[in-house]
Length: 209
Image (cartoon, rainbow, N blue to C red):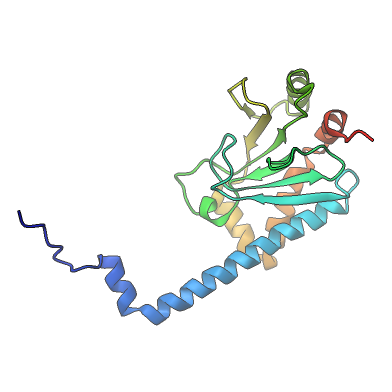
């Protein structure tokens, strides 16, 4: 039985275009890498802006890659975690997070909208008690927002989030303007609006001395 022969040869139409424009494609590849590095720097500026504010000092910022982030929404995320909070080794740390705000997410209309939220993974002891108390307090602070929560009560964490009001197109416009400063300010402001949740997280997560 003869195998079907691809009339285009071993390369797809896109592959053929790449061969014909190889040097151009290489320059685009290097530029994409540079854009990614600059984009990461913007989020470090978000973190630095927040660290100067009361309640966010002594905080760390984590970028959770897509292949690791399997909490509730399948996008890469950025989380702000205070060093004084309990953090279970090898797990995603508790804190305030931005989700779906990286370039792959902002340029893909098929993905879930960008969001901001809070993630709690308490100590194993007392975690079952802490989660309902945390959700009840968080919902009071987040009233008026269309908050989604992790549906599985058997999980050992709590995660609540709501979509950002700015559409992707607006966020990309901010990204390209003013050296990215409008985008940095927008991201920091959204996390800052969750600042009232920090004392709630403190009650549950402050490390025992």
